[in-house]
Image (cartoon, rainbow, N blue to C red; front, top):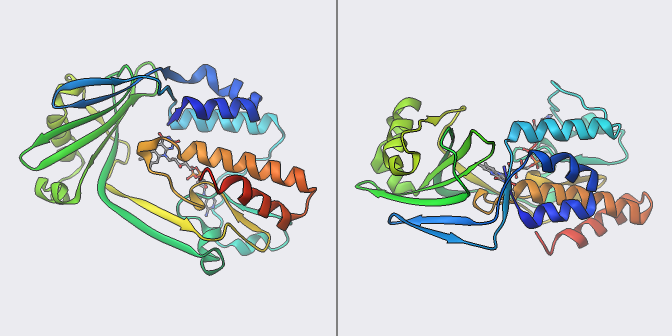
Length: 272
Ligand SMILES: Cc1cc2nc3c(=O)[nH]c(=O)nc-3n(C[C@H](O)[C@H](O)[C@H](O)COP(=O)(O)OP(=O)(O)OC[C@H]3O[C@@H](n4cnc5c(N)ncnc54)[C@H](O)[C@@H]3O)c2cc1C
């Protein structure tokens, strides 16, 4: 996961404890870079920090437990009706949110997807900063978003448009053939390192939008509410900011759930 510098400053201002808990584990760099036609172009003033997704989840779980949150695992919520007795139900259950799907009309949900295809790998090649690399072959143009998330590993996300994806013949390729193809395209950048698969399949980015953010005592946040493209490295930041804003709104209105939802939207709609 990458976070822009600004996002972590925001976390420091609102939740110093979580900021202090995460910060020592982040990889950070002051610049980003674009590689185009073999030219390496640094762009300064755009600091980023990164951390492996699993490590971030572990650290957040530790922090939640320290604050007295009871975490339940291995229980898939089948329907929002499981919470019929609750005062407040927060749908923070991601892109395929059960809460949102249970109330699509009330939320005014729109679901779509972008045309480009992307596949998400790791690699042992350690990059010095967040980099957007463009490479071209007879099938078309490929773009890789890559950055290190630990001292020994980097994320390597490959993206291309739909016609390029078809010409390359990915539909008929298995995991090993797909990796081999991408390793050839990005050979100058991988410097002999392999791509590492983790259930890596080509996907289309889902677009989620909701006209209304709450329905009765139910409210959405994070990807359940709206997705943010991975290229801006902000989905997790937006989800955390949503949670902070809802918490603040509930504090301000003293437990009146509909007033809190109105305040939550007032705080969050402009930045979203
Ligand atoms: C390829 C890619 C790269 C990305 N890179 C970045 C990045 O670099 N930086 C960044 O900030 N963001 C990135 N994002 C976006 C980021 O992953 C999401 O925006 C973020 O995880 C949203 O957080 P969330 O808590 O809303 O949802 P999620 O992280 O999806 O969490 C939802 C949780 O709900 C649980 N859940 C779902 N359904 C049920 C159910 N029925 N019952 C019980 N539990 C359930 C899930 O198990 C999960 O724990 C990326 C996304 C993609 C696809």
